[in-house]
Length: 347
Ligand SMILES: [Zn+2]
Image 1: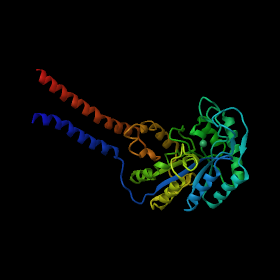
Image 2: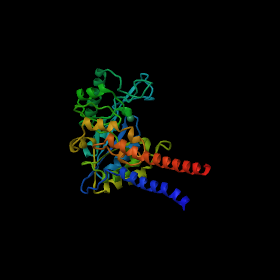
Image 3: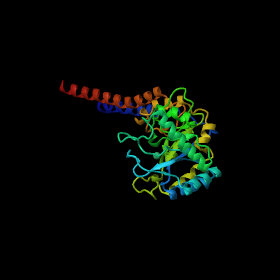
Image 4: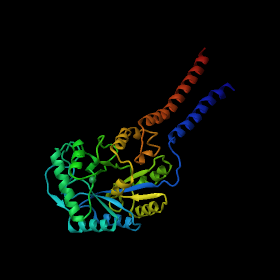
């Protein structure tokens, strides 16, 4: 009888605490029907030598449903390895590549954004095209690239996607000086209080989209927002090393997402008009919980797949603390029980 009691108490603690932990993890989830989930697709690295076949198939997937995709275009792609900073020739877009963009824009499918200038790192110590460049150098590259893209596509280009999602404070100033109004990098990105730029960081990849939509449906955000990043190397048809899905699966995924009545697929440019808060403050709050989000249980709950409206560092600490307290308490209880049993035997 005494032996059963010895086992029973820790098991009860375990069940109760696990239950509490699970509930804390879903504390913010409430259902609010009628609130659309906003999904943005951002395709990076369109350039003179990117995979045109893959790009035409991507455009086709979106065109089938008349939904937009934001293309990150490199105006003057460096030849050879972009991770090698040695000076080399640059490739402007040829007429075929330019025509694809122009047609896509005119159809309302392509939202044209600028993804760097040549996408070449300026140092071998880190990967960045813009970080650590002088302000005037950054302004020059941005203005030149933007003017060129607007010229060949006829589209307004107001969004900048920094290569490797890396940049510095000068980049923020240079963007405003060059006529950009939106910055899309990742959740780690710098943001400055009071900056006039709109921030729209990437939140997930293609394989996480369904999870992200389901999470967004339960989110308490007023305008749940998902920014999906894709590259040509995501497709097994073109890259069997880095690929994560086939084009067939991609088509099915786009069919699925566009069939969801409560999902609104928008471009980055459209988001800057319909999403109420893309402020620097929101980006700063998001950056604060970038690393806490990597720690379970936050990484297990999928709120990290969204660009949350009010991510809270305090709440992240409480949730993570509660999760680990469970193990700590169970360990302590077991330790005390075992010690007591050994002690009573030796006495
Ligand atoms: Zn890139």
